[in-house]
Amino acid sequence: MASIVFAGGGTAGHIEPALAIARQWASAHPDDSIVFLGTAKGLENSLVPAAGFQLFNIPKVSISRKPTLKWLRTPFDLIASVKAANGVIKNADLLFGFGGYVSGPAYISATINQVTTVIHEANTKPGWANKLGSLFTKHLAVSRQVHAGAFSGALLTGLPLRKDVAKALNQSEGNWLQSRADAKARLGFDNSKPLIFIMGGSQGSVAINSVVAQALPALEHAGVSMLHSVGRNNEIPKARDFYRPIAYVENMADVYLGSDLIIARSGAVTCSEFCALGRYALFIPLPVGNGEQFLNAQELVGEGRAKIVDQKNFTSSYLVSEIDSLLQSAKSAPVEGSTIDAHAAEKIVALGEHAMGRAQ
Image (cartoon, rainbow, N blue to C red; front, side, top):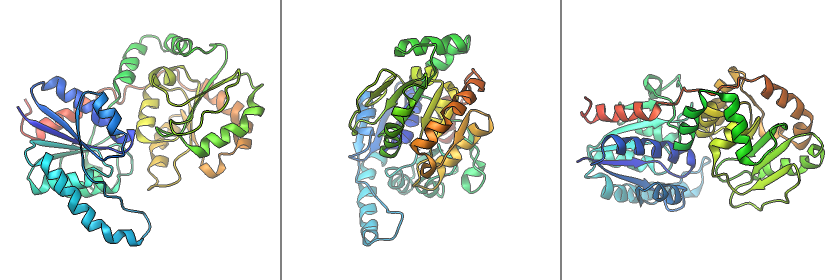
C-alpha cells in the first residue's frame, strides 16, 4: 500500500483536476492511502471532504504581487508552512501538485523528504508555485502546450474533467443536438429561445454582475432566456420572466450543454469544461494575475467557439449592442463538443505510476 498526497487548493481551478485524478488513482489502486493538503480558507474545505477524501490544512503563504512590508514575513510564513507540510509528506510515496498557495511549501517539503513529485499545470502560462516546483522534478504535465520554460517539454495530457462533465460528454457523442435540447429542458427553459448563461467563476464576479444588472432592461425584449450564477457571497437580484439569478450552479454539465451562449471568466477549468460541452462563449479574462486567463481562451477563439473581451470594455452598452452578433456566432459554432480532455486523468495517473516505478 502506497501513500499518495495531493496538493492543490484555493480555487476550483486547482481542486477539481486534483479530485478527478484522485478518483482515477483510487479506482486503479484501491488499497492506497490518499490525502489532500489545503489551506484554511480555500474551497478545498468543502469540495475535498464532499468527495470522500481526507484533508489536512497548512498555513497559507501569501505573497502580494507588489512589494510591501508584508514581504518581510514571507520567509517565516514559508518555514511554518513547510514544517506543517512535512507532517503529511514525510512518509508519502508520491506527491501530486497542481499549483496555488499550498503547492509551493508542499514541493519544498517533498524535496527535503525525497518524495517523488508529479506536477500538473492547468493554465497555458504556469503560475509561480508550479514554476518553483519544476526546479525539483522532471515529472511534469500540462493541459495545453506551454511554449517556454520547464513546462515546454512536459507531457501533454489535457485537463481532467469533473465526473458529471465527463459523463455528459460520453452520453452526448451519439446525438449532440438532442443532448443539448434535453439539457435545456431539464434546466426548465424554452428550447425555442436562446439560453445565455453568465458566471464569474466559483466565487462570482461583482464586475460582471453589475454589467448584467445594468443591461437587463434593454435585454428584456431580446427574445432570450438568461441564467445567471451570481456567486454564493453575492446578493441574489430579483428574477424576471426571462432572467433567472441563482447563487451557484450544481448541475454544470447541463448548463454547458443547454446554453447557446456562455459569458464567463476564462479560468483553465472553465475553458476545459466549456471545450468539452459548450457551444460558444464570450470570455472576460480576470484582469489581475499573470495573464493566464487570456491565454487559456485563445485556442477556443481560434476554433471559432469563443470571443475575448477585456473587462474594461465589457459594459452594459457593449453587451446590449453585441448580443445579436454573439448569438449568431453561437448559432454558427459547431454543435459538437470536444473529447480532447476525455482521458487526461488516466494519462496523469500513468505518469504518476511511472514516476514512482509502478508502471506496468
